[in-house]
Structures are given as structure tokens and as C-alpha cells.
Length: 487
Image (cartoon, rainbow, N blue to C red; front, top):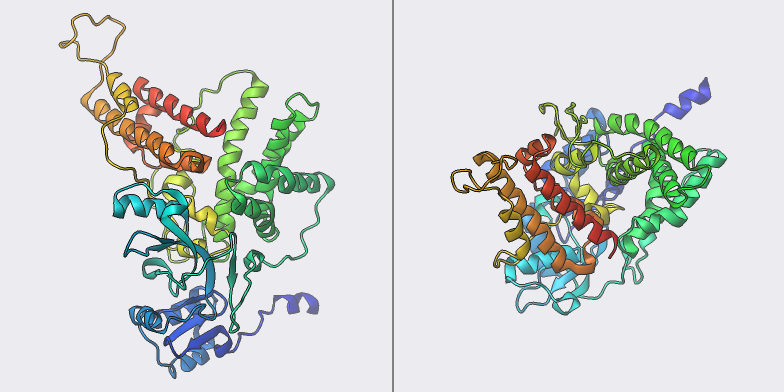
């Protein structure tokens, strides 16, 4: 009994000066655990919400803070502009890019953001590495106050670390990967699935060397302390094995095993989504990615075994209450009614907006690369409507009064249906043009977010009713998916 009681005793709070590191030159307070600066007006809430330091336990921290000269965020950023210290102790150093357009020097953390910047600000498509330099980046704050600064020096590919008071000459990516703990005991079947995932499946769902490292190493480590993510990995691995061995005697067993792990994962995932916090948001995002893969792969396996085509469409499903989501700041979807979206698409369309107050943690966390894949606006240069859009618009049937030769089998669309179809066709055309601009950098994740996220509820309603125009657009979207698959 005493052993059990001891294990439940919370660890003592750190010393205020250990948790909250003061930078007198910048007049800023850096959380040594979260690795970013805290606004002076948000310190008490940070201690309460992030570190669970409640009431009387916060007094020594607030007493310590009261002795410090702290500046508002805007002044902290101005002081860094004058001091030009790099790296600033306690802040992450991340791989980033600097725009080479004369007089611009815009900083961002990914090529997609840089390409978007060139289209939006300079009005032309970027020419790859000719129009930006790879540099090291830091930022004091997150969210609306996020503003990168750099020393202009090149950053090694894949480098990401937290620097201490000593200037680090070499930065190692693995420094930000959660420390390995003793994993739960796995039976032989699960151990084999986990090994297959890290040595085979991970490479097939990666889009570049950085994301491959995440799926091979970082995300399995997150799964050691997040049971729903571990079962998501095992389900995905089993489906991958079933796909690789369609004629094997164990194919049906692997499919059932995948369903078994998904059945365990989903209730746990739903429970986690009721309280999304900085400590579990990385595992939530990783599982959301896996859920998309599992949903598509499960449908394929179901059709293979049943030898029939499913009457379910990719983007719609029978109406049902959406998955409940609540974040640490109280952002919730509790007010929403039934949804016709499958869970994976609901997470894509609604999850990002509901999780907006957690997104800052994701963008600077261990799987920030995955978060960045959903967070880039789709922008292409203006131009004449291409042949695809013209073709899609030509499929709108004419009114019987305008076309005397219309046969009895032809149908007309209402004005509402025509408007919905045109708007959805334009979005789909934009997706194809975006793919043409990115070329080989256009990934499956781009294809999933670029159209399903932008289409309207009205289009989804048409699709649920099997409207012929909605089905045509869905067919062309499947062509886009196929183009990514065979590239």
C-alpha cells in the first residue's frame, strides 16, 4: 500500500529560477520546459494551464517574477533586432529559409511557406533554391506573435535542437525526440507489426527524409506513452502487410488484426480528443495522419475480400454526431450538429480550426513537419481558365428551353446546384494547377488537403445525394490522387 501511495505523490515543483529563465538583455522570461518566451500578462495562466501549478503553489513563482524587469512582446522583438544575439539561450534553433528577393529577407520554416510567400508578395512562382537561402531560425513567441529571426548562416538539413547557455556548434535533430522509456510489453504479433512499421511502412507514407525520420523514430517513441497511437501504428502496419501479400493465407487474419487494433485505438483517441493539451497534441496529430491511411486502406481491403464495390463514397458517410473535441483553452465543437463527413475528413476540415490554440505547440514540437503540411495556404498565379476548368463547366446541362434537341433522359440542374458545381469545379481546377506548380513536391497530403478542405457543405450534400455533377468532380479528384500515387 505504501508503495502505491508513494507512486501517486506528484514530484516537487522546480525552483522558479529553474523553470523560468530570465534574459536581462531582452527583458524576457523563457520557460525552460516549453522553450519559448511567456508574455508578462500570461505567466500565471501558463503555470496553471501548462504546468498544472495551482493556487498557493504559484506564489513563489509570481513573487520571483515580480522582481524582474519584463518587456511586452513587441519590445522583446525590437531588443533582439538591436542586440543581434544568435542563438538566444533557451530557444529552439530550427531549420528555415530566407527570401533572396532584393530588400525582402522574409523568413519562414518550410519551402511550401516560402513558395506561398513568393506567390502572394512577389507575384511569381519561386525558382527553387535560386530564390531562397537555408538559414537558422529562432523565435521568442508563438501564435500571432511568432516572428522569426536569424543570423543568416546556413542550417544543416534536418537540424533542430534546443540550445543552452553555451553556443552549440553542432545541432543534432534527435535532441528534440522524446526520451526513450521502457515500452509496454508487446506480444510477438505486435512486436512483428511494430518492426514492420518502422522498417517498411514508414518509408511508404513519408514525403521526404525528414518525415521518414519522424515515422521511423519520433512517432513510435510518442506511441510508447500514448496507447491509442501505438494501436494506430499496429493497425496501419497490419493493413500494409495485407496489401503486400494479397494472396497469402494470413491475409484475412492481418485484416482482422488491423480492425482489432483500430477498435482499441478509436475509443481511446476519442477520449483524448475531449481534452487536447500540449502534452498529447503531437500524438493526436500523428494519429490523425494514420487515421486517413487506415480509412483508405480498410476500404480497399474490404472491397478486395467482398469482391464488390462499396456503395460508400470517399468524402461522405451516413449522418452522425461528430467526434467531440475540446482543447486546453476550452475551444470545442460541442455546438455542432450531425455531420455527413467520415472521421478522417472531419478532422481535416474542422480539426485544424478547433485545434488552433494548440497549433503553436505543434509547429515547434517534435512533429512540426507534419503540422506544416496542413498549414500552408494554396495560392497560384492568376491566369486564363485552363482547359480542365473549361471542360468541367461545359458538362453543365442546358435548360430545356435553350436546347430543343434535349432527350427525355437528360436532366437539368437547379440554379443552386449549378452555383455549387461551378464553385467546386473552380476549387478542383485550383488543386490541379497547384499540383502543376509544385511538381514532384506535391504529395498525397497536399492532394488530401487541397480540395477536400476547401469544398463547401453544399457540394458534400450534393455528393451524398449522388448528384451527377458532384460524382463527376469526385471522379476527377480521384484522377489527381492517382497522379500522386504513380509519380
